[in-house]
Image: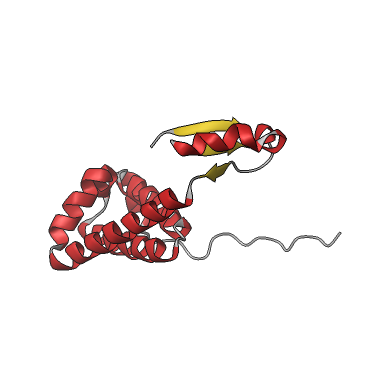
Length: 152
């Protein structure tokens, strides 16, 4: 799908100049002081949501029947999965699929996106053997004592 970008202020000044772009593209409205906004026709939004829901549930079903194949398919898209130890890889695939299915069903994909970033960071830590060893412990006590902050 084509994406066209407009300044948010241009949309506010003349929506009739921006809205025709929705006939063949999704529109991103760029804002200076806040997150950008995305506009799309309801038909495309509903088609995307339906397709995501079907794909997520189908992939989750595949994962239940053939975990190794699901891991292989997901690793094709997320090559950093190979840095995770086998048990962690299984947990990662299970969590990501659960979040994806829940997000596809509710339209709330932010937990999936956060978990994806978290697992990627975990995989990056595992990719460095020295760091991975250090993070597994053992840890010396609770750390140094810190004085209570002074009340101002």
